[in-house]
Amino acid sequence: MFVFSVFVCSCTQISLKKAAAEDRHGISIYLNKTVIISNVIFVGATFVSTILYRHIQLSTASLLGSLSYVFVPVLSLVFIKEKISKRKISGIVLIIMGLAVFAVFGESI
Image (cartoon, rainbow, N blue to C red):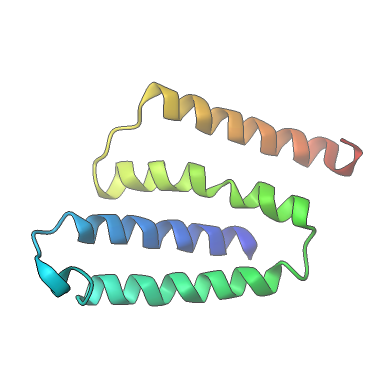
């Protein structure tokens, strides 16, 4: 459930980035349907994450939260056609390796 919440927050970031690329001026930058819905969903997902912090260890939550650094570039590639640099790929690989090490060794580290 926590990973899903991180994924939803990542999706809202992409939605906001896509909305920011639209040619709007003044207050319409902030008061359009996409931005308002994205912000409401983001607040909801953050609220759910806060509740979930009570049920999982903080060390686990912080590691799972780092998945947003994986989700955002991948979603950007799919929906905005943003390229992923070699440096970002290296970072994503390191994050996944760190999560794998934590999954295998868990609390013994």
